Image 1: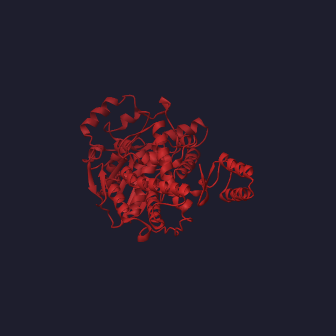
Image 2 (image 1 turned 180 degrees about the vertical axis):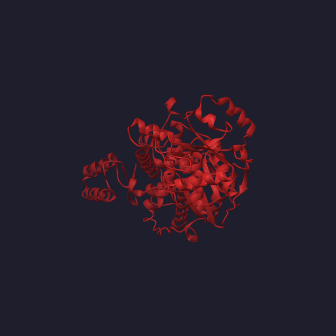
Image 3 (image 1 turned 45 degrees about the vertical axis):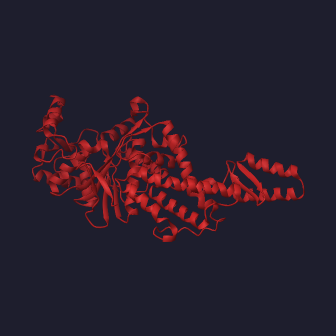
Length: 487
């Protein structure tokens, strides 16, 4: 089956067709850089990372853009608290973002545009909106005239009359911004400078852009008038993404994005995550507990991306156990491949001898259904369990039930498909015990033990065996010789 995607705009699942054959233009509304990233950011970044990886796996050439919002009241407030500057605060948390994403194995985007670096594009877009009658200046501010765009509300499903009634009830007669607007639901494209705040010169006076216009300008500057996928959290559907459509399509007369995709929110123990509730968890806090980053990735991908997900200690513990099984399978070739005379894995997917086509087909059929990563994982888990079982047989019985060439194909298939989901396991973490005992050191101790046994010095033989056991190594003697494995 072909890839189908649930489109928030049409509220239907649709076959995926790109603007340009074989190429995908994808934009993800990134983070506002005023604090460390939290679990909600982790979920979104992992999901869109895997969507991108899977599209590349299918053969698409993907241009993936993710912005940083580096002009915002929250950043300004943090700068005031720290007696710092907006630029310094933004730079610090951008760097922290990259540190967190590296730990989660999230691939870098092709570009990270920032609002402060897109000022010319922002002002050009506002000017064009004004020229076309969709924007109006008001005492140094510029507002979008929502009534001028008849399709406003098509993404969120909200009706203008309901918005008007709701907005009117919130307007404060003393609010200077409210008095400037022609309609209460109009939104700011440009805000006049305030004392002590950063400002940029513009045709409307010194000031700074509104949040919504920033993304419209960055999409246009980096990807053009129409893109294939616009992604973000479900909390951005209204007003942010709704306003992006109104701004961009009013100027270009073209569809901004063919597919709008939104991930579900993260709850903590059944409640919305918030600092006021004391359940606000940053990525680095979670990973420093410590929690394995791959277990976090598994926790995220075990739920469908559009559904809410509940973070609990039990859920992360279950994901950690699941990752241990998957990791065992991924490490199989590294640990036993030399013994089984495995060939070197070809990193290019498509070499027939390297994978099992039926498994790959089942994986594609699962994920092609609106990026159903949980069902894709369900295809991998039996492979991982089988490889772990065969590894256990090899350790305890000195042989496997499955021929080595078939095990090699299973392993190559598992590693290749796991990489599509962003899972990696390295042998370095497995080759030393807690006190630094390496494989060659273990082999040397076993040679000493063998020499002691030949000399009938069984006390020394037992001492070496017990020392290895205390250091996490189990030694097994059988008719076929001596084997060992790490506990």
